[in-house]
Image (cartoon, rainbow, N blue to C red; front, top):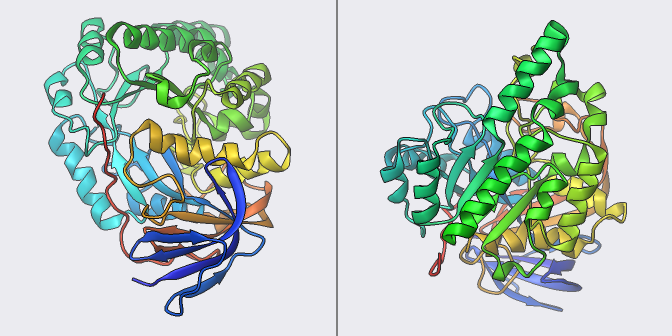
Length: 445
């Protein structure tokens, strides 16, 4: 494998920014210093660029198997790499859903051949697969996913006794999608009766309401506290939910939370322009909710930034509101979006790296990833100050669209390294060694 010296980058790592060189060899970071000499290494001039650990996205839907008309592990991992994302955790609601250990292994097998980025997959739960869930190996699988709200397939877990058993005995971290199913159904019936065919996405945040989210999230937190469960609550969408979490050091937490790019960027005021293209579950809500999520992100109650990348075809999204599926593609622009917030003074570079790189690695106990450290895997993103207007021809998503189309970001991803392989050169993907299956070092779950 080639050796590289990344020369004179602004290294953003472990709450510091300093100028230095990074020597990459045999897939790992061999040395970080102010000046490195190695005649056998290819030099990359990174003066004026930021070098950060590759982002770790702990919530994506890459749609394979069964939904490959929307996306595949290969296409979406390429988009991730072009966006400076070097590792991903993928969700189980594919077709068939990953609710047995054999079906989960099928996804790992696909990724071992086709994922350009590093990968792990969540084990899925249902009301009927408790024994399969308990067989999950915490050293080889990122976690267990519970849909405590509407989902595709047989994945809604709403049986109280099943939830109690899983929370009491889970062999690894539980990640939850929290929306109260009955509240959503009641709201939908109310708005359908009132508006009929005129019902549109502008009512999405009222149907999938604050109450629906809070009822479910608070229930998950209560169960976790009762059983001492290691719980991670995904895609917080309301300010009220942020009150459930503590602003203490991550290493001391048993209950953690995530914010997603779309809940930080958009509000319900954007439905009029973006329509179903920003229809997500949980829904994008009010500007006050967005402000509350930002406050919790910055004060430490919310620990991680992810995307919930969930592509659908343009044709699917152009259907009437009730038929159009929820979710959209984000993984190629997530780092750029956060750097845009940095340029606006909303967040520091050190905080971006903490929330997108360090914290996912800590939270999931990832081995040798998430930091720029000697001996760690060389997962590195180089980001430079260069305007980049998002257009469809630049997108690597199989679905071919983005809610950020037309947006000009002030920063772009110049290069991405995956395990020491230069996989993105700022213009094109360089196919090469596949990403690696992520390993975990867990002793005290």
